[in-house]
Image (tube, rainbow, N blue to C red; front, side, top):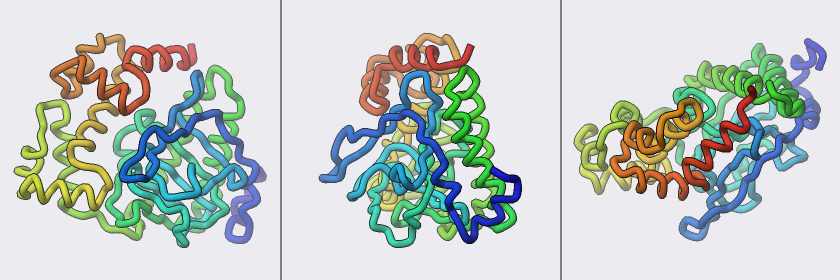
Length: 293
């Protein structure tokens, strides 16, 4: 891509059609009140992210109403849409351009604060960012860099693709204050206490006491604003930490379970298998096999 081609993004998005798609599995794993819930499982030995252009279904994973348990970034080069996991998404949402590149990724691959903008509280599960004109060439280059690394599929592509994703998510963090939604102080406080205490015994009542709300009211509020319950967010945060420890350390699985807040390693294994799709030991083996040596 020529160095100045990004300057044309206000008038053309043809560059999006050149984005390759990495090998990944996105499949329905259950139904929630009749709505299919999709899970993203990176293919073995592949980076934990995928990118596709509009000709590959850039609007997302499903043409009907659905829920996904992973973040999605949609962008047409001038606007970015952050699709929250755990929310019911209607692809007929008229505010989203059809000619978008789509990036899906495993949040365990990046620092938690970089995935945080995708856990927003907008009523429809979609937050919108306008990309300033001076930053659009940089965005275009980031997308092409990610696609190029995914296409290489060599021993270094995993590390490089995650690095480029980190840069792109950092750009999103910088633009965060320009999002059309505004964070709710109560929801922000819920996430803050989960982040600070997920390694400890932590219950809905504990979180409610911290934010000054009854458990019943807090449950309704958080589910309405985020699509998930407080208990589900606690489990999600613990499993995120567990995946990082499984991938980055040789610690026994029982020790990892306790380190992230599960007193019972057997219960941890059941929850991990249910939410992630494979037992911790199997998941760790796959991560080791896919790490460049």
